[in-house]
Length: 128
Image 1 (cartoon, rainbow, N blue to C red):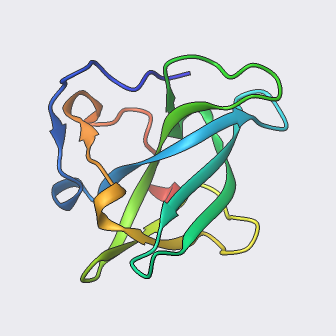
Image 2: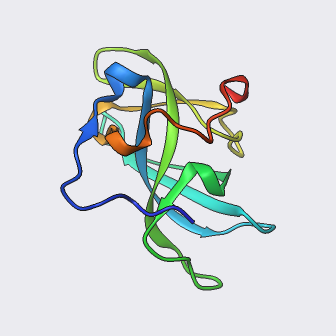
C-alpha cells in the first residue's frame, strides 16, 4: 500500500511528466497486491460515467486498506497519452471491463504526482 502523499505536498503537473493521478474508489482485488478500482466522473455533456478495472499495488495510492466488501478513497496513477480540448486520453495499468486500456477523461479530474515520486524507482518503462 502506498499512501496518497503528504498533505500540501507539491505535485508536478502531468503536462510535465506525462504521469497523472485519477481520483477513484479502491476495493480489494482478486489476489494479493491487487485492487479493484472504480473511476467515476461526469462527461462534458453531463452524463455520469463509471469505469471499473484492477490495478497492482504500485499504481494505487490510499491512506488505509479497504475492509472486505468496502471501498476507500484513493488515486490511480496513469500515463497521459494525448490531450484534447477538455479531455485527456490516459493509459490505465490494466484494461477495463468495457473500454480497453485507454480511456478519455475530463482534464479537471486529473492531478499531478507528488514531486517525491520522481524519479520513480519502481517504474518499469516497458510496462507502458
